Length: 336
Ligand SMILES: [Zn+2]
Ligand SMILES: [Zn+2]
Image (cartoon, rainbow, N blue to C red; front, side, top):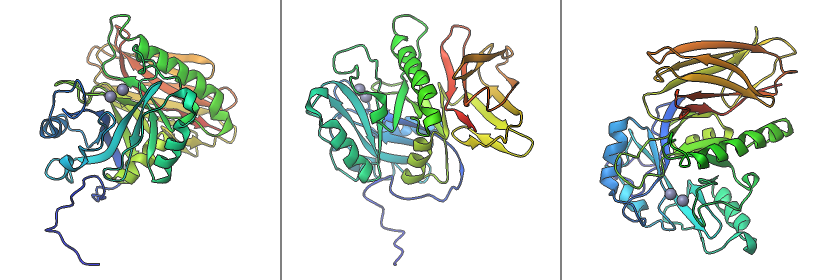
């Protein structure tokens, strides 16, 4: 194979950058001026992503992949991975196709009654892509999803800013509540759908709020999508929020998205947070909210909780502001 370092790839997002296993922050739902109602150009989005310190973004225009070539270097690069995608706006719900082959468009002219969405989901998966149900409770026709969570690989339970003013946070709360209930039902069957959070950026100032922090083997499309698919991820309102969660026995330790074989021993769950002044940390299992702890006015804190696999099949974490706005939430650690 001949190395051609001078030949800039036409399409971004297709190379591993050799940064290795790490937590990477990214926003997988972005619109440029190619989407109706959006005001930012690709160069403006790329500049904003770098200014925020995001490691990756996904391009997800409404029903077009014409923007894929626009993200070629220097807008993508070793410091900013760009995952090629599309927002598929069907008549009865929107979904994100992430990891598409360059300029390969997904059809959107159908609804729940046509029985065709699953065929399109399979096609995206067969090409190595990830199918994410977008904003399932968005309060407008076609934005509200009629599709069940179980048809998708992940669910965008957090779309855009988590407002403290009702009713504008009602859609995120509803999406999260259904996700939590579905998780309790699915975890012990061995297959569950991870949560993701994206900004759905249309306007300046929206990027990264929220975004998803993913543990991946590398900063590449394949590795990031694998991390999202496995739920090795947590959701943050901004890059100023830091969270570390682990569950351990004397012999083993597991992070978010992993299984902890407990051997019947006691489990210690440890949560460390910074960046959420006077915030409230809650731990959740299939039995509901099982632990609550307050953070300092400086926004930092560490809390521990003890359980067993007999008591809890999984544990997940939420961090909220005193106003109840979400600051961070995690996928579960599975206890067996
Ligand atoms: Zn949408
Ligand atoms: Zn969108």
